[in-house]
Length: 305
Image (cartoon, rainbow, N blue to C red):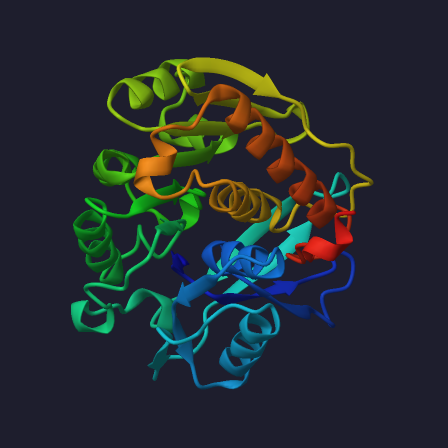
């Protein structure tokens, strides 16, 4: 089973010309990854703190309908987090967050199982970076990493991260226990401005990471795996918006690795460059479908043909 931990929030999509009728979409990067996994047929469980308010009920329904297991959901007293999403003419999304005192960030150590028996756990985005819950998640992942593959997507949201140097120090710790790193070129430009992504990726591989993918939107991805570095093109798409595209990429990447015996630590250690190329191409295909429709709405496996 694959676990995903982090925020599940509501994306309120607002028309830039008329903001009077926003549309609520279930969202949050980690939850989108879990939904992608569930829709692709992977055995996936979500670790999240979900409110009992109307939005929290919507999130539960969305996860369950996407065949994501909910046995480790925490019933939270706090309200659901909100992200205000506006889409520019090119389909790119911009976010403003309303998160003070909301459910996603209040993790306590006793809310997380110590031996969940997972093959892999995916983490990243805001919940791992924001106090007070972020350090709790970090310690949990570090303890699991000796026997469980940890997948990391920083998915940077600068407005919520505070001091760049402090965030960078946290990320360096996460990189110490992550076996899979998927990161966008935009993330890297904010974290390490002016640094060549290849220089960073090569250093991570040298330090023990098994698979590193740098996504570049329509320019495709750069990949390091199996002793090689190579590029994989983006899949063609009729663009509607990019909401959830990176998350569906992460979910599809994990799904491919799982289905092909390359997700658990022993299998990931044997991942070849040709296998990684195929995995990333599949992830790009799934992300393209997500970009072809509004909101974070990844495809079901039957839609892929």
